Each structure stands twice: as structure tokens, then as C-alpha cells.
Length: 211
Image 1: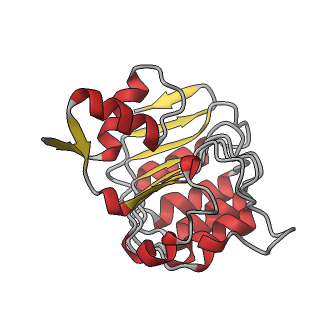
Image 2 (image 1 turned 90 degrees about the vertical axis):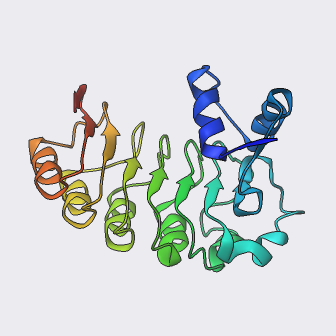
């Protein structure tokens, strides 16, 4: 049986206009295609994972490379109830892909707590996380020097200060989407990123797309 990487299947379904592609959906489609998902033990989709089953997270935390949490509303992301979600206390040293898009409760405090031990992160998607802001983006710049792809569009508050930090410290950056609706970003951010990131190919901002 042919094996496909989870992100490959996710991209295929995205192009088919499926707005929310969970791991369960990918498994169903793959069964019809007679293919399997590779790296099964190294991916967790919080959109289909409950707290009853998250106990196994501890066992595999240091091996996980892909974390899918988009549209996951059942997880408490702030510190009002139980400080931080249980998995924030684990070391995700091998994590390279993090998708928390459209998580309504994710906050700067919780997110920064999470990426403290994720030095290998290359792709971060925070689209629609309206409670995130400059502090979160600055900490990404400080902690994720290998970053190649960042999407903070559709509600993440950002200014030149934080985006310029990304440009100066994430020199492997290839793609950056700060949101076409973000009017706090100016030419300064674009110039800084293209100056310090030789691999940058796409910078999306303020109803423009510079490629």
C-alpha cells in the first residue's frame, strides 16, 4: 500500500475546498484511495482528540512532529482555569509543524508557554487566533530560528515591531502572511523581511501580495 505524508493529504483536500481537514477526514479519504498515512505515531490532531485519550500524549511527546489543532474549541488555552493545558508542560523538541488556526481561546500566555521547547518549528499557522498579538509573534522570533512559514492573518494583532523581529531573526523564512486586513503593518516590515530573509518568496499584507 502506498504511503502519503499527512500534510500532503491535507493540502490535497484543502484544494478540494474542504474548509476543515481533520485527521479523521484524512483517514476516511485515504481508505477510499487505498493509501495510508505515514508517520502515524508522530502526529496528533486535537480536533479529534479528547482529554480522555490525551494521556498517551506524554508517552510520545518528544517524538511528535506534527500538531493539528485548528478549530479546536474544547481545549482551555488561557490560564484562568487550570493554569495551562496539560500538554504545555511536555517537551515537544521534535515539533516542526503547528496548526492552531481558528482556535478561539488561544492566548499569548498559553502559546508562548507551548513553544518554549520547540526549537525545530518550521511551520506555524495561527490564522484567526484573535486573542494573539505582538508578544506571541516576538516570542516566535526569539524561539523559532528555523521558521520557514508563518501565517498570522485574520485577526492576530501585529505591528511593525513584531514583524521586523521575525524578519531579523528567522532568516530561513519563505512565506509570511500578516493579514490583508492588518493596517498596522507598513513598508518597514516588508523591507526588513526581504532584506534579512534571502529565501522569502511570499509576503502577504494590506490587500497586497508581494512575491
